[in-house]
Image (cartoon, rainbow, N blue to C red; front, side):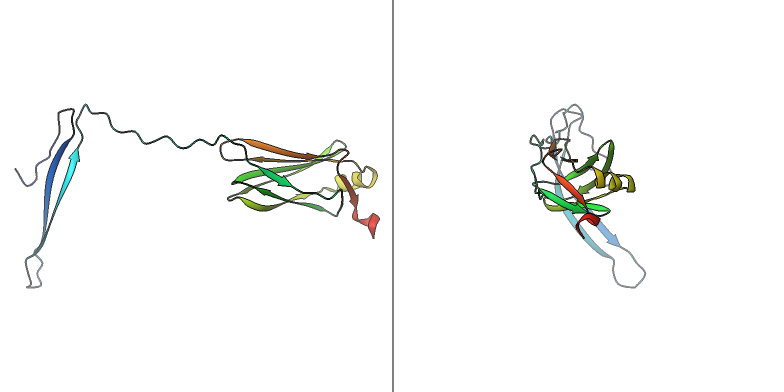
Length: 167
């Protein structure tokens, strides 16, 4: 066989071929020539042979589990911190609705475990909290495959108090 030959398998069945590669260093350092030989067996797929397809990725069929624990009444300033746990990596979105105003926060988490999400409260929402005690808090957690789980509290299950009223 020619040392620089190209092998093409025109059949449909794979063929096993033994390949030997020799590399020779003919440098000018008055040592040599130095050479190394490597022999290996490779399989050449046929032209009409179907290429093996990679296995399909595992599909996630269950939504993430989320545990959100809240006190029955909370005191807030300009932020509301939510602590929760998830059983897988996910993106969490929290929204706090007071009257017709809503404050939202979104954050992605790369691993399962305990997480904290902070909702920044606008001046209008803080002003509404002085007069309205009932709010609705929703925490939605979505995993990478789009499966969602929501935890909600309110309007009768959660009461928020403005900090200035408890000093």
